[in-house]
Image (tube, rainbow, N blue to C red; front, top):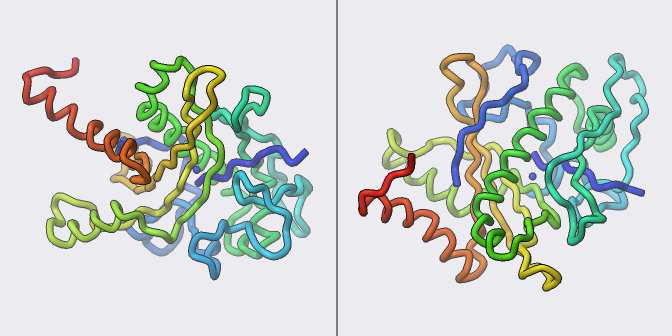
Length: 271
């Protein structure tokens, strides 16, 4: 997740993936909470290192990714992949002139993995679907962040923006760690499998038009969910919330949880 690419010149809600995952099927049975994409080839010595990061490469500080990745066919590549990049719906940086975040093209994704020796075992014909799955999940994460930010957006009439993000796939968040512990005690109630990915996104919350921004860190845990009963397609759950970095974030998380309970206790129900 989170393979945004800046121009060189990442609440719980189930989300059904629109992409055909048949190209991801393997002879061995995947783990219950595994991402539909095989991440075994992404492993590195650094627990929070992006799979395409390393060496003396010039990196973009906004996404910790190489500044320039070729769109040319890789040596020995058998399938020609698209070089078209998808523009996200996520505003980038502090001002409108910085535009929207862009995702890498399938060809850039393959070249990035091969460049760092992480592409072994990745079928070329699966790369396009890999990009689509990750783009889909990142868009879902942003929609959840917009829900958290809605009360501030209503006050300022200025939409939040994404400043930067960091992938931390091997770092369990405190909440994910707590759920795993509870899963051992109450396996029928709580998840017993860890998230398959984690991101930290730095979101810019407006302080008012022309009054600047407040950086707010969000933590996103990505979980696999049971396959859709009707279609059999994989589903996912994104657990998105402000990090407990300050009292305001703590209050937002408490009120986000407590307000629905209060409404229910008062006999108020959403339509």
